[in-house]
Image (cartoon, rainbow, N blue to C red; front, side, top):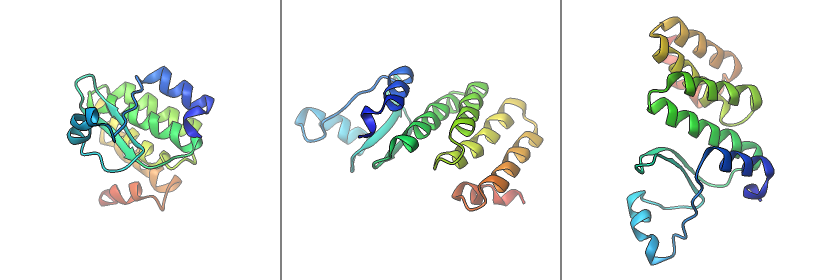
Length: 148
């Protein structure tokens, strides 16, 4: 099971405050309604105020779960305008998990984070060029194709 794997436990406990909600209990109704829960597992990266920075539904094996969680952490940093912090986490995903399902998304947003930090379009285009060459069949590659 994914949640018992040491790498998953280390990532979850090291970076997040894990909360498990039994969506069948009446006491969970406010959470179910707030986040419009439909399917489990429903994994969310939330801010202290409950803002939903990142989420996904469905099972992921450990080798996909950890990089997806890290992309969630990076998204929280990016949306909080910590562009350098976000870039560091995206780079970590690409270094440690270059073949993961989350890697193309990390490459896409790494380029965006570097651009936001520098306001230099060269950063954006260089990062997206890496996306084109490393992940040519990714939906994230399609999202940047307007720049070609």
